[in-house]
Length: 310
View 1 (tube, one colour):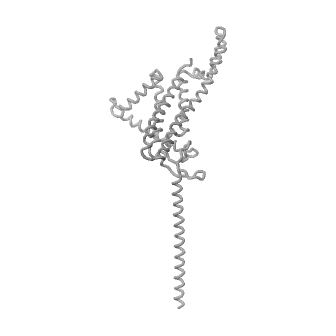
View 2: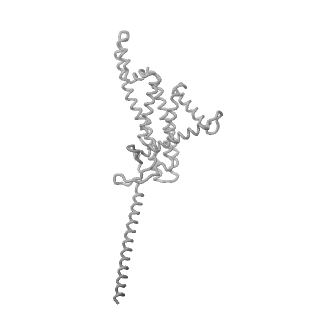
View 3: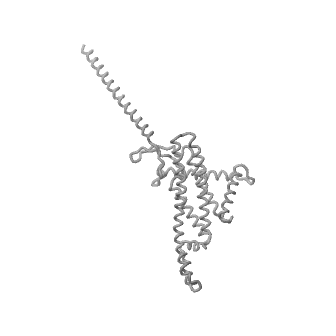
């Protein structure tokens, strides 16, 4: 009898222990399910807002790599690979793709001639100008491809769950456009120094010659006392103009490309099918126009810098 009571007691304890484990398992399952639902809901609630700044993706030591920088590297890689492949297929008698690009290059050279009025100058400036055009055009168009701006990861920033894309249009980042504008203006000034000489180019901004000429010509031209200081002041205005070129080039390109991204995102949010298509074609045209404007203005700056001041 004692053995049977002990057995019954153990069975009751085992049943109670099993019920307790099942209750704990159900609670853990509910907690895990709730956490999964919360995580899913947080991911669903996380939206990628188009920010004025590029989002950091990873770090190389102290150097932060942003999604727009990755996109720019991708464009450089595409240009290098395409150029090398095209170079291996160049033939004396062009055909196919080579023929198309020879037409494009010849048309671009003729357009440059209309600005410089000198084929020699055109050939000097063309590699820089056409390189800028190709880089900006591909960056503008690459931002329209599927996956650019929509493939990425979730991260917590300042207590908010945000979506960070791996790629972002390079020219939709003000850092990129400012760097391109600085390159354009600095290249124009270097071209001026090389072609007309350092002293002539320097006197466009700080006109020391204007003051040196005053004692030499004051007897024959007394008005030079008033005219030449004005020439020196114009040089200061030229310095301000160089700074304005950087602002003009960078903000024009950034503003148009960034506004296009916001427009497409807004149209896609309103209606995902059919309606965004006309706007995408519009952005293709805007991408060409903005790349062409930037390249032509760079050519104009280089042409002006390579001429002596009058």
